[in-house]
Image (cartoon, rainbow, N blue to C red; front, side):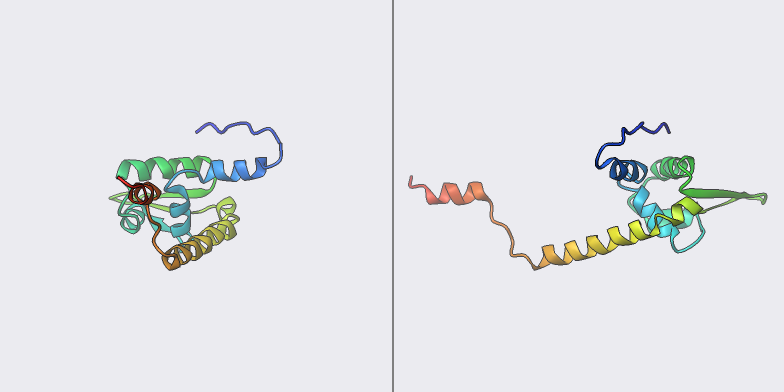
Length: 128
């Protein structure tokens, strides 16, 4: 996958990081690989919402970006394991921070009273 060439302006470091872990699944894959080496089927079971095609695509992109390693064992049937690379390991604090923030955000959202629809309130407030 070809990466964009970021001009170093304020915020470009954030852009570089987000470009590497963009999308719905890459961060989740990296999170699960923090537990250690996993086979394709194990990853797929941990992420029931992802298709086989999308998981394959995302794993290839993460491997191309040197965030994960792929090891093929010469067995019948072939066994393939994925793990965080050294570069991927350095993302561990980022993934952990995203997880914490998501948990805290979800907890805050659950404590908020339900929001009412502004259009419905306006329609009810106007006399007929």
